[in-house]
Length: 109
Image 1 (cartoon, one colour):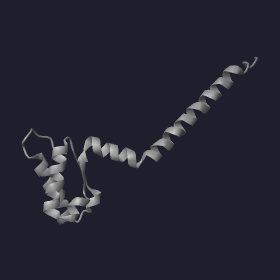
Image 2 (image 1 turned 90 degrees about the vertical axis):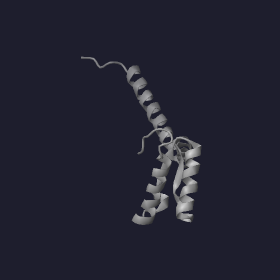
Image 3 (image 1 turned 135 degrees about the vertical axis):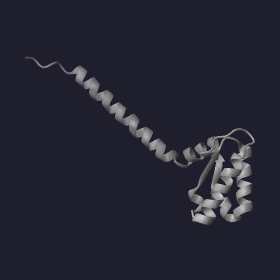
Image 4 (image 1 turned 180 degrees about the vertical axis):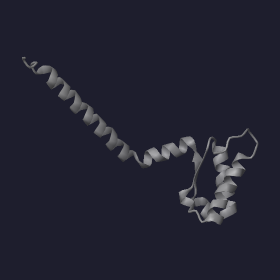
């Protein structure tokens, strides 16, 4: 994670770090996720990685927080839908059980 002010070289630092991981440490490019705030910075990172690494640079995932999260939600929508459906069914069962307990008479002592 890199925090710094405008014009301080954050995009350059991240780009060279990604290129170093791929070229010097044999990290598979598709295992790298570089996230930034602006489309401009993401585009610059993509272009610099292509210039430094060629096709390997294109395989690294680079994007904004918004675009990255949207891509993940689209990719895993079915899983998310299944989880939400399961939660809904569990709540419905709990409500039905609670209604049954309220409707049954209290045991006598």
